[in-house]
Image (tube, rainbow, N blue to C red; front, side, top):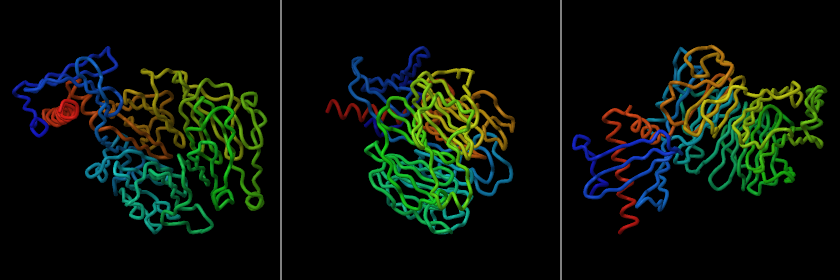
Length: 456
């Protein structure tokens, strides 16, 4: 049966064509005795089976993600290496055995989720934030055994803590998240029915499945247990949450952005003597509608993506225009107006953004990665320590289809889709013979499965 036989390229039974002007790559497989057509869209691993020019169904095979890292040598999960990685490097400890679906990193530690729902962490282990039952550091990705049997879908790293959400909506947290001074070294179950969570400098914010309330807590703000906050849905249902510094950023389905300022307890304020001003006197206040500690950001067009770190907020509008805001630790913003990325990205269609301590990243719908900002320790992936004033393509990853990105203080993590990357290489004529055999055999199996499903 064709599904079990590799394709012999020497017999010239396979023809590949690519339309540069089209939004899709068309691959015609001529494999006797059956002749079928497949259209491979630019979206990650999305294959559409075609018969007679009519799309019958979309076939989505198992996605396979490859993890790459660049920046500070002690943070990128490659073990004891001396030099910083100024170009993206394949993280073999993960890629040799697993496919990666999601990533997150803080200034000192990192986490990845595999397609089987397992978590791997590495970096600084203080406060138990790696989740291995101790405070030891790890230089290579190490599985979190306590959650090995839990199907994890989302993770997030804070300064001294970590969170993970299962496919059933259960939120786990560990590290410096409760009254235990030395930290919780193993994942602890905190909440159920959670959609998404974010980690700030010293707090955690979790958006409930109902999308109209969130929970906030953290030792750093003097609130050791989750506290419920009902959200104002005037401007739509909330669909995304991010944290950075002492604020929580929420995005609605109508493109509005709510800024929630985390308020330390009175006891915590007395201990630290913080002024915690609401916002600086010279702030662009006409652009905000504020009530107590919550602000609706006004003046921006429809926002589709948000990102946040301890120092910056970044918003991407529906027109793919990027705005960045500088955060002051004791105030909401520093400066009168947001900074607009004035140089347009070469290709429209931003699908993901991330903000580090002093650098930024954006992924386009064609899988191309752009980075800019502070380039110290090679964290931009451009091969140098030089800064980049405007978004610049990471050339080493130009032929890879990037699906996820996370920026931290000294390093950057990316995930690329293996099949889409190799199919694009195949279409552009850059594949080796072995790569052609692997990809075409895979497509032939999809074709055979589609035939068996629809015509038998």
